[in-house]
Amino acid sequence: MPRAKADKDRKIFVLDTSVILYAHNSIMNFAEHDVVIPITVLEELDQFKKGNDTKNFEAREFIRLLDKLSKDQMIHNWTPLNGKTRGNFRVLMNPENQMNANEIFGEEKNDHKILNAALYLKQHEKNRKVILVSKDINLRLKAKSLELLAEDYETGKIKNITELENTGKYFLDNVDPDAINKLYEIGYIEAKSVLGTRKRKANAYYILKSDKNSVLAYFNPEENILERVDKKLAYNIKPKNAEQTFALNAITNPRIRLVSIQGVAGTGKTLLALAGALEQRRDYKQIFLARPIVPLSNKDIGYLPGDIKSKLNPYMEPLWDNLKFIQNQYKETDKEFQKITELVNQEKLVIQPLAYIRGRSLSNIFFIVDEAQNLTPHEIKTIISRAGENTKIVFTGDVHQIDTPYLDSQSNGLSYLIDRVKDHPLYAHIKLEKGERSELANLANELL
Image (cartoon, rainbow, N blue to C red; front, side, top):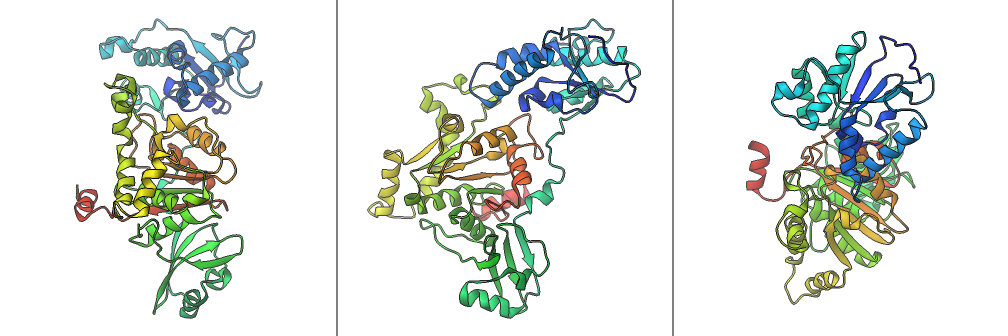
C-alpha cells in the first residue's frame, strides 16, 4: 500500500536482532515513528525460532506478529503498525549502497549487513532522522563510527537504578525513645505514632534510632503497625547485620510471597534464601533452587565436554557450595545434617538450571532463583506467572554484575521486577551492602 506523506519530524528506527529477542513486541513501541526491519534480522530470527528458551519464544512471537500485521500486504512496502495515525513498518532487502560496512570493517557478517541497511536509509531518506536501535553495545559503537545515530532500546528501562536499589529499607533518627521501648516491650506499635504523615511503603524495613537506643522494625501493611524484627537463626545460619536480618525476615514472613535480594558477591543472598527455605521446609512440598545458565563465550552448553551432568556441574556448583555450608553447621550425626541429605535424595530439595524448571507448575513450592540479573523482564514475568497456591519466590542477584551480552543494570529482569512491583503488599525488597564472606573478600570488593 502507498505510504503516507513523509513528515520530517517522524524518525526511522532500524531494529537489530538483539532488540527483537529482548522483546518481540518492540516494533509497536515507537509511537508515531516508522520502523525498519533489515531482511538480515529475519534471517537471524529463523535460526532462533526452534527451542524452549525465552529467545526462541520471542523469535516465534515476533514472526507471528509480523505475519499478522502484514496480512496480505508485501512487507517490503510501508505498512501501518497501530492504525493510520501511527507509524509504519517495512522489511528492507539487502541494499546496494555507496558506503559499505563490509568493506570498512573488512569482513562480511550479519552485523555489517544491518549497518548497511541503516546507511542505505540515511542516504535515501535525507530529510529524516535514521536511528539504529540495538542492545549490542559494540554494534552501536560501529554505527557511530560510520556517523549513524544509534541508541539502546529504552522501553521498560529503569531511569534511576541507585534510587531503585535503596527501596525497602529506611533510616529514621530522633525517634521517641518511648516508642522504641514499646517495640521492645510488646513487639509492635501503631505505625502513625512513629512514621507520622510519612508515606508508608508496604513491607518496608526500618532502622529506628533515638538518642538512647535503636531497634529494627518492619511495616505490616495489613494491620498498619510497625513490628520489631529480631535476629533469628535459620537452620543455624545467623544474620550478621541489619540488612541480613531484614532479608531473613522477608524470606520467612508468610505474608510476603515475593522477595528480591540485591547485593554484591559475598553478602549472603543465596545462603540466607536457602537457609530460610530449609527452616520452612515443612510448609512446602518442595524447595527449588535454580539459576539461569549463561553459556561460556556465548556458546551453548552442548559445546562443553562430557554428559549432561558434567556440562551442568560448573554452573550449579555455587548453589551446592551454599547447601554444603549450611549442612556443615552441624555434625554428621546430627538429624539436621542427615535431613538435608534426605531432602536431596528424595528430591524434596532440587538444584537445577532454570531451563529445567521453566514450564513446570509451581504450586506449594519455595522457589529460589539465583543470579536473577541475568534474566530478561519477560523471563521474570514468566516465572512469577506460573506461581500456584502456597508458592513463594525469592529472586537474588546483583544488578551490576550482568553476564549476558544484551542486558545491563537498567534493563535486566531483576531491576525490572524491583521497579514494577515495589510497594505491593505481597512483595519485599532488600539490598545487602556489607560483604560477610571474609575480610579478604571484602578487601577485593572495596579496593580492587
